[in-house]
Image 1: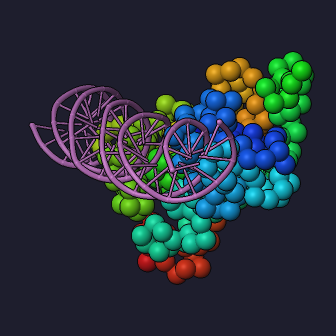
Image 2: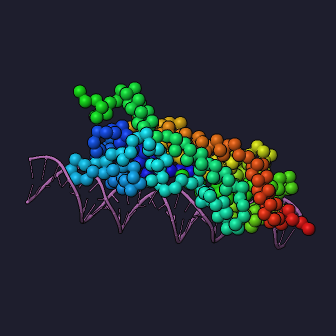
Image 3: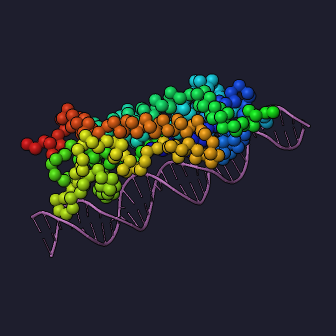
Length: 152
Length: 152
DNA sequence: CTCAATCCCTACTGATTCAGTATGGTTTCT
DNA sequence: AGAAACCATACTGAATCAGTAGGGATTGAG
């Protein structure tokens, strides 16, 4: 019942991008430093996020990443499934209940399925735009302006 | 985002017990055979389930296990947490949001927390009594009586 | 045109967890 | 006494995780 570090880091990175939407590409290195994510590990995450069509990359010097769609249209579910594959709580989950070998109908499978579905609902209902808003409120109220925000 | 085999097997075993509530102790071996669970692995699960106060054991020949409370009062959450420890989706989940090193408030943590909470709700709202009913309906309609049920 | 910055990709590795086995005990019924 | 059952701990092979390594390919700047 645990997501891996990929989701944890990946969502932080995507929120970071959402907070800088429209300001040109953001380098993986900058994100890595701001969010305390190992640089090479983050690179791998971006490969998956790009292949899922969530971010677009600009190569070469002064390159970086940007959201490929408006932050309002990207959900946590998109991010998590891009990084971890299809969501499920147990091996015996999913459409087919009868993976148990005997091919019998299984009451337990229904529970696992409902749990997966509940998580999917939460993730699918949360957009990067909302999270970026929340994050920026946190940063303002905590009196900790980021380098990008606190210019003067 | 996966529960382990402990939950999967453990819930099957508990449903099995719930289906035989009030009929005296059921041996781990019988459950192991009916549910296709490795015998020694199942024994380990029962250690945890007993320590959590969910089943009581009768030792010695003709011994076995029985639910320690009515099946209506035992939820899937009880079973899963007895076997896997406290439920959570990420390491950065739970009451404290700021495990991220920097001690900052984290928008991502709120999502993980809501997901955990959703699963907890599903699991907490499902009792063994319901699942036993469902399971027995399956078995009747599938024309596959178990040894215990189809006597004649 | 060179060079540094950046993205791209694959392979590797140490640590941890998982799933299951092994071994030997203790208790109780027959 | 002996078998049936629960109790407890330790071990192990395989898989997964989290991260590192090492090299490519692309592009802006000087």
